[in-house]
Structures are given as structure tokens and as C-alpha cells.
Length: 480
Image 1 (cartoon, rainbow, N blue to C red):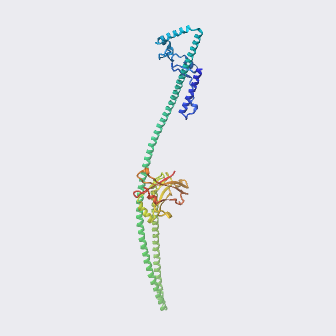
Image 2 (cartoon, rainbow, N blue to C red):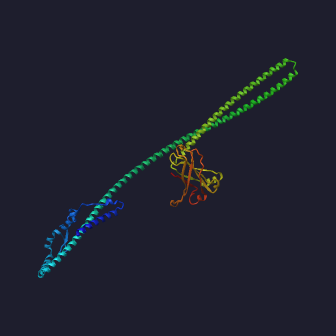
Image 3 (cartoon, one colour):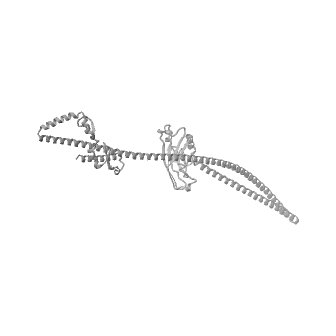
């Protein structure tokens, strides 16, 4: 009976151990917490036994500590109990008492003595059973504790291995991140160097183009002045020839009139008429020769004028091509922001606002792009407003301009951006920026865009710290 109770208690302790493990690892599946031990170790002699012989061994183990029955308050192993009883100081007194009790019992009748002995034997049995039961309980508890310690050690070992693996992974990831960061810094430095070299080359080319344009402008001015002088001389020459021809024609008419009069008065003399007619023919031929020479000169002057016009047109065309090329180089050089992020600083706000009120001027930001080889963007600002919003609001729009890579981009263009008026408060924690969300749409690269305007009241701009030192910062962030 006591053995069955001990075994049931051992099973109960096993189930409690499993429940404790489940409570420690709630995320672990229940099927992984079942442990089976084929052998158990004795707490007193440290020997291993099967589950069937373990309980029987505990009853007969000689290393089990027992208290001296003589109440000398000494715990002696069971195998040495007899030798201790012989040397126990209280054994003599007990023997004398037992002798006296045995003598008293001998004086009593045999039936009574047998009944007393049976009572003593039953009492000893109950005491022994209770002691065995308590020992079994203690041994079972010790075995359960050992099992729990074994489970905890296994769990600790597994946890240490997992933590070691995690540490190794973290170290590997940290080394990879350090390497990636170093590589990114090298790439960034390389990009900065390339950008600087390209910028220097573009500046050199722009300077050369500017010098060439200036020289061509000087040449064009010189040729134009020379052409104007030649035209003036040609006009003077033509006017002089016309005047001379007109005088000659007048003289010829007068001469013809005289001849007619002479013919009328001297009709009878044919020789005189013949001479006059020959003279007249000669004068007419001279006039015709002069007219032909004048026409030839006019044709030559007209050819010269045409050549000069052609040369001037070619020079102007070359100048226009150079200006377009220079504007393209400036546009390429100005598009340096390719991350869709722009901060536009407006200096001398009051002065520019007065100019906008007087001349309706427009402020243009630097060109930027939403990404590398992306859409070309620019922020246009009307400080004094426009249309019905004029005089009370700041009007702005985000324009999609014609870019170099438009044939490679997706159309229609749909972009979303945030326009932020930065609060220039000295305490950044208390700063409150003014944010506007806008949408930019354009059908195709050759489509004329209808601007999508947004307004910001002047009262908002003059409030808080949006204006500081007569400067304002407008930030544009294009969403990806």
C-alpha cells in the first residue's frame, strides 16, 4: 500500500515537473516536454537501479540514516546500527527497564503477555510503515528535484547554445554592416569626387563657350556695322546715279525739244536734220550705256547685300546654337539634386515682396529631380499671389519641366509632394512646420502642363518664426 502511494506520488511529481517546464516555456510545444528516465540513483548509496527494483532497494539500503532508538539524538546508517546500540550510553538503562518489564510480563498470564506482544508488534509495524512512507516521499521528492535540475540544465545548455548562435550572428551582421558602411562611404566619396570633377569640367566648358559667344557677338557686331556702312554707301551711290540719270534724261528731253523745233524751222535742209538725228542717236546710245552700267552696279551691290545677309544669318544661327548649347549645359549643371528633396531659401523677403507687388515677378527655385535620371522639377513662387488670390496669399506650384530623360520615363506623370514652410525656432522641439500636400500631374513629355497651384496666407507666413532675419525656407519632399 505504501509502495503504491509512493509510485502515485512519483507520477504526480512528474506531471508537476512537466507543468513547471511548460510554464517556463509557454511558446514551446507540449510534445517536446515529455522526458523518460529508465534508471534512478539512490540518494544514500549513489547506486543506479531500474524503476522496478528502486523501491525495494530503498527498504533494504544499508546507508539510510536512522535515529538511534535509545533517543541519544544520533543518526546512524542502518548497517552500523547494531554496533552503535552496543556502545550507546543509554542502552544499559533501556536494557534494565526491558528486563524489569519482561520480568513483569513473565509474572503475568501467557494470554495477556501474548496480547501485549501483538499490540507492540502492530505498533512497531505502523511506526515502520509510517517511516518507510515518509522516506519514500522524501526520496521521490529528491528524485523529482534531480529530474527538474536535469531538465533545467538541459534547457540552460540549449539556451546558452542558442544565445551563442545569436551572438555569432550579431557579430557577423555587425561586421557585414561595418563593411557595408565602409563601402558606402567609399562609394559616396567616389561619387563626390566624380561630381566635383564633372562640375569643374562643366564650368571650364561653360567659360570657353562664354568666351566663344562673346567673340562671336563681337564679330557679329563688327560685320553688322560693316554691312550697315556698305548699305549706306550703296544707297548713296544709287541715289547719286539716279540723280545723274534724271539730269541726263532732262537734258535729253530738252535736247529733243530743241531738235524738234529745229526740224520744224529748218525742215527744208535735210543735211542738218540728218546730223541732228545722228547726234540724237549717239546721245541715246550713251544714255543706254549709262543705264546698263547702273543696272550692272545695282546687281553687283544686290549680290553683295545678299552675301552679307547670308553671312549674317549663318553667324546668327551659330550664335543661337551656341546659346542653346550653353543653356543646356547650365540646365544639366543645375540639376544636382536627384533625391526628390529641395530646400529653397528666399532672402530679402520684404524687398522681393515689394518687387512682386510692383512688377508681378516670379521666383524660380533650382531644378531638381525625384530620382536619378527622373523627372525634371522646379518650384515657382508668386510672393504676392496671382489672380483672385493676389495681395493676400503666397501662390506656388511645382512644375514638371522638359528633361533630358523624358523619353525613358513613364507617362502620364503622377507625383505627390509635401511643401513645408520651416519654423526657424531656436528650440527645435517646439518648432511647428507648416505642411501642404500637393499632387503634380502631366500627361506626356510634350504636353503643355496646366499648373496646380496652392496658396499660403500671408498671415501664416508672418506668424511664429517662419520669417527670420528677413529669410524664409521652403522645403519640398517628393513622395516615392
